[in-house]
Image 1 (cartoon, rainbow, N blue to C red):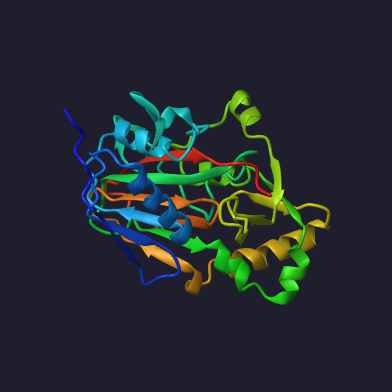
Image 2: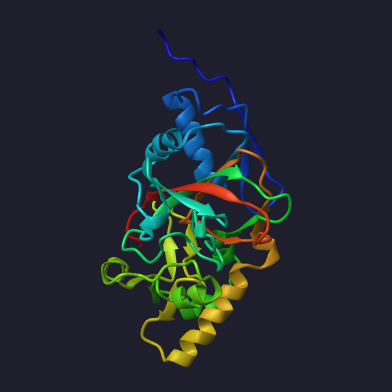
Length: 289
């Protein structure tokens, strides 16, 4: 029996500093190499793609994600899907007194897994349950942040490197969220601090982007701590100016795929009494340069 061929699909750009919508595509059906190539090129050009009304299984999400590269497993393994450990559950839902997922993911601006030697290429987030209000996700274009950086700041960060640490805000998050678990010594060893360029070059497009975040970047190497804090504060503030940011308002069954080499993101917040659940897969990238 021959595979069902995908019909033609459209790509519609958002009126925003980033992002595009894929229309007329059903990921239940196989993607031809030509269709996949078109999606890949659109992802590189627009940094974020929204696939509407995707009624796919976690395994299908994993399989689609794997077409872009090897998948990374999050250090908090208690929020994996048992049947598909590559999937991290993002949720504020409490059942039997326990959280079913990571409820405070995205509280600070960040790029996923920037604290690893090989940070994420990109992440896919698939909506399972959405609240009646709130629950938006914001994305900031770090290429634009670099392109519009004032000359004095450009000079200050040329050739600079910064430390990224998963532990940077971890205890603050635990203070705010009693359900966030303490890390074991083995988990802490898994997320030792790493050094990355403050300005990274996208390995596929060659475009430069700022690569620091309030969540994971702890210091700029080689300068006094007070100067480092002041410089990072300026970079953080500039990165998320309104003209750099797209706000995604989720629709049922949205699958959002963004490039962590180009963007940062932030959870907009969900009222505690409203249920929100999404499934995340994360694709491994390479060492930033």
